[in-house]
Amino acid sequence: MPVVAAVGTTHPLAFAGVTFAMQVLAREGVRPVCVIAGVSAQDARSVLRRTPLDAATIAAQFDALREAGVGAFHVGALLSTDAVRAVAAGLAAFAGVPVVVDPVLAATGGDPLADDATVAALRDVLLPCATLLTPNLDEAGALLERSVRDLDAMRDAAPALRARGARAVLVKGGHLAGDAIDVVSDDAGVRTFRTPRIANVLRGTGDLLAATIAASLASGATLDDAIVHAHTRVADAIAHGVLFAGTRVAPETR
Ligand SMILES: Nc1ncnc2c1ncn2[C@@H]1O[C@H](COP(=O)(O)OP(=O)(O)OP(=O)(O)O)[C@@H](O)[C@H]1O
Ligand SMILES: Cc1ncc(CO)c(N)n1
Image (cartoon, rainbow, N blue to C red; front, side, top):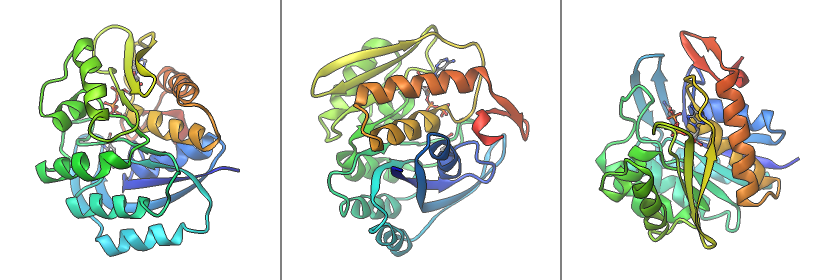
């Protein structure tokens, strides 16, 4: 069974974050392991507290994974520059293993998870570690320090982020009106993936997409096949969300 490591920050209700990614990975049929890089306290409305773990504790968790045969990494929210640097250093020991980096900067409710220095570290230190970077519109804009608000801007942003070191980039257009359109840039060029918009809201779609892609890459799928499969999972989760703690979440968390 392929092994996938979820790296990131806990969410006590598992609406998102490494606690949710572990569930997604298990449901995809891979064995989840993890590196906890930070702890967050969040409820349905806000981020109550966020505490990055120290670099030595992050490094030791990567050391502990050495014999696990990790087949892919999913990297989610990181809460400090030190945490970003420690994760990049930890990943360096796993050369050739696919790394899906979701550069989470804020909770869905809008509360920040990363400050300006952490954004800069993501851009300069972690982005070059990414086999696939999966920013939403706001994250692409923050990483590039310009506005990314429509399909044309997404088509420019994806290769611009790739030029900064990520081997492939998927800019998520879920927050635009109309069909859900994601723009992908890799060495084969720039292309779009379009899925019909499902008229409902769901927490955790970003983590669901990235963790599902990581599971497929660990199982040997091509990038395009991994993306197509992840879109079916996201669409299914949005269509079949369940209410938990006052929030509509993916059925995985039931
Ligand atoms: N209503 C929808 N119907 C179908 N697909 C959607 C919908 N909303 C988002 N998606 C898809 O879900 C994935 C996540 O996109 P989104 O832009 O919402 O990311 P995000 O902002 O990181 O997520 P989150 O809201 O969890 O922070 C993308 O592949 C996007 O195309
Ligand atoms: C820990 C964590 N990761 C990701 C998100 C994005 O929703 C969140 N709110 N919290």
